[in-house]
Image (cartoon, rainbow, N blue to C red; front, side):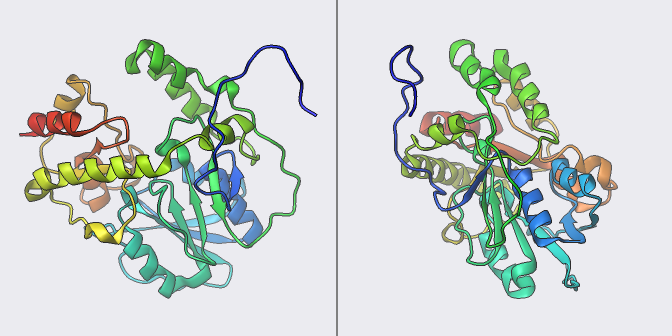
Length: 315
C-alpha cells in the first residue's frame, strides 16, 4: 500500500495514455535498442538523414550498420535486399510520411523498423516494430513507446525522471531562455542510459493530457502555415489526409537569413539534424535538407495569432 497522509504530490488528471497498449520505456532510442536485442539483428540500414543518437545502441552492441540516401520526397532511394538477420530503419519525417511507411511495409515486411519519434499520433501497423518519442510532442523529460511482438528476456526496472524536470518547470516560472541550459543538460543525460521502464512520473503526466485537443491544434496550425507558405516551400508535402498529425511545419527554402531572423525574434527552431553535416558531403541532398529546412513550431501552445506572426516574419 502507498503512504497515506503527509505532503502532497503534483495534482495530475488521471486519464489514460495515448499509446496505452505499447511497451512503455524510458527513451525512444532504448525502444530501438530493445528491438535490436529482441530480434538479434546483425545489421541495420539507417538513413543519413536521422539523429546521431540512433547510432548509440548499434555501437553499444557492435551491430553493423549502413547508411542509405533519401530523395526529395524524403523517401528511400531504391530497394535494399535484406538478409534474414538484417533490418531497415525508416524515419516518419516530421510526422508526414505515413504513406511511405505503408509502402515500405509491402517491401520489407517485418524486417522494417518504423521510427515514429516525429510522428506521435501516427497509427502503428500490426506486426511492424514501431517506436515513439512523447517528449517531441509533449511536456515530459523522457519516455518512449514501443510496439513489437518480440519479448526481450531480461528484467527491466523503473526509470526515475524527477531530477530531469527542471527545464519544464523553469520555462513556466522564468521563460524559455532561462531554462535552455537545463534542457540541454537533460538531453545529454539521456545518452547511453540503460533500457528501463518509463518512470511513474512521466507515465502519470502522459495520463493527464487531452490528446484530441493537442492533435486538433497542431493540425489547425499546420494548415494555417501550409496555406500561406505552400507556394514558396520547396518540400513536396503529402496530401493532408495521408498523415495523422505533424510535429512541425517543415519549410524548405533557399534563404540562409530566415533562421537567424526567426531566432532573433524569439521563435526557436530546431535543426534536424546537425550531425548530418558531418556524415554527408555538401553535394548530398541530406546536407541541403539539414541546412535549409526550417522546422516551424505548430504545437498546441499556439494558435492563429502566433502563426500569423511567423508568416509575417517570413514574408
